[in-house]
Length: 464
Ligand code: ADP
Ligand code: MG
Image 1 (cartoon, helix red, strand yellow):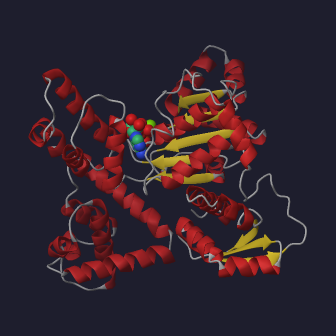
Image 2 (cartoon, protein in one colour; image 1 turned 180 degrees about the vertical axis):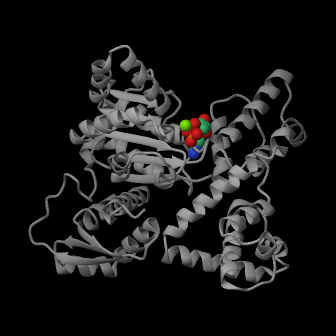
Image 3 (spheres, rainbow, N blue to C red; image 1 turned 45 degrees about the horizontal axis):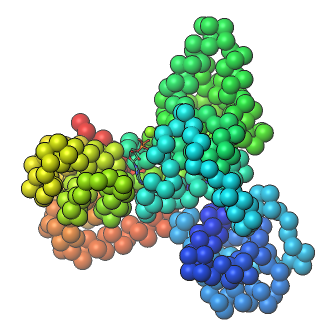
């Protein structure tokens, strides 16, 4: 997160406020009060923005809009940010990379031009924004992806979407491609390729003396989408080529999007200069969806299908398959197939029975508290017994509180149950620990990264 400047969060804040106002039918208020604000600069925990007059700035305060801006941007950035206004008599014309909002007209033209018939051969037709469920786990990535598709090469460039297996990276990336392709009536040159295939093509082009063709193909792209860049680890020649392709495209304002199964910092063997390119733009993560989002995803996957699956069955799946949307989908597919082949309505009993292997497999079932405790203890080089025990030395208390926090987040256990697993502590202690970690995260956003690393280790632990 350290490479972000606040302008990125500013844009996102304005966009979310705009969406909210529009949803409430208050678009004119939005244009009256937010459109004239221009982002100027930022320093630590502070943003300076310009407004047309002192009256305007007073109004922003009394109407609660300053508070709204501050709380939204603090929430998005994970830092406490205050906003200072300066008065600018002449309107600031930084429209190009502007913080303020894209204008209505262009959006309208786009939707008029939109045709549904064009389809890109390299992209999955169903990987669209429409079919992607937005939840707390992915809303930042979703909004960034949507912004890119509205304003390719300008909104955020490059963008790296990272997150664990089956959390929707490929879906979101291709949604960008599909949206731009259909809006441009198929005119936009979009290349989607996995890092693995990029590498293979590159190697073949060398052996077949086709380097020029290879270079031309990629450097002519309007939008380059490269999936799973963790595959590039120590493929030196390919990295070198990608570096040059990157610069060529970036310098002519072409959009670059990458995905990766972990944060960049955790990829070893990637050249410094390529890493600095990936880091240049926006890095957004996809986390595992919570219970409600998992349910919504299942409902979305059922849309348009003739099979009816009762709500309690969907909830059963959502409760038992938590770490991976692909597995969630696979459970549903299995039930649909069963229902079609056997000609029976799916009941809770049938679902339990059909999915018992999925639910029971160590990869799927609910994560155990013990796994969390073991992973955290190992990460902080303390003993598992101490982590669960009564000792109150500082080096143990923090990992213990962190474990409780993660347990609350990743499992369905109540605070009472969690307390019982941590040396028989009572539920208020657990609640206090969770609040404490929430505050720590606010004070030190890098803790979020540590938490992501731990969660990944926890999921990996389950697969062993
Ligand atoms: P990844 O590339 O991160 O491994 P994918 O993009 O291949 O994951 O997603 C796996 C499956 O889960 C796809 O079928 C995708 O449509 C689905 N999926 C993931 N997240 C969502 C979501 N938020 N809403 C709807 N479908 C999702
Ligand atoms: Mg993928």
